Length: 120
Image (tube, rainbow, N blue to C red):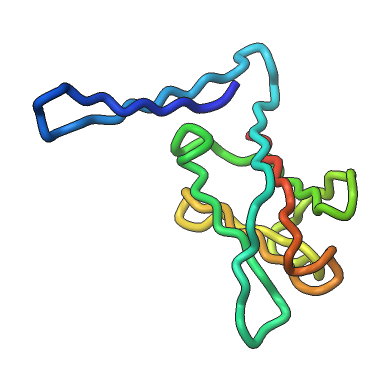
């Protein structure tokens, strides 16, 4: 389960091409991808930070997202995220391609490198 990407080039030519292959467990009802050690983007002047993850890099484009979880460095527990209305962590899908995770106060701290689990 995962994603592989190859670059293809021919010696002596100046052009190349890329191929992306998504491998999934077709027997599982819930597909998941875990992104480890994500880096927060800091918002200067606010107490919130965010992650912006290009979903097309990890799952097939257009695949609906069922749930999103986050596991901060300070815990071994996966916290389920909610859409836009949690005071600590929330998320939204932007333009169908980007997972935007917002963190305000009360998490571990701004240098945390959380893991993110996406179930689709």
